[in-house]
Length: 181
Image (tube, rainbow, N blue to C red; front, top):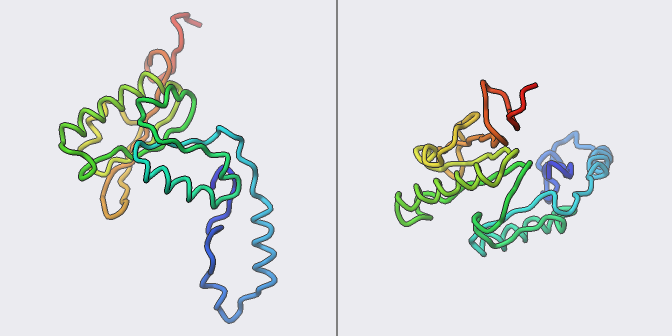
């Protein structure tokens, strides 16, 4: 919605302010038409998603189909191990935690594997990862750029940003080769 400039509440059927005594329907229609006219196309392949849970993928496809240009967003049923390299992009995810996993050992192993995937196959990208259980943040094996408290569905979790650089890091600077300038 942000990329395509789809206005907030685009799918909302009713707004409470329309019941206010000084509500001006003509003004509202003008504002809404102007906002809707600002919607822009989404290039095919710019936005994609995946999940290994087919019900989650079905729900995502249904939701995205309601938006303008939603047909340009591909959502597939596949685990992260099968999606291939994702370089120079933004990655947003919430790995499974708690009831969605058999044990803490399963969660630890999965997060370590996911951290390795990010480090090895997502160079040049930024990853924003939500941890519903803040203690699991350490299991991914990557240094955060920042982390912020974020409540989601009643869970007091953490949103962490990871910058996934190419090459080696030296004194806080990004270095892509051994050639000195």
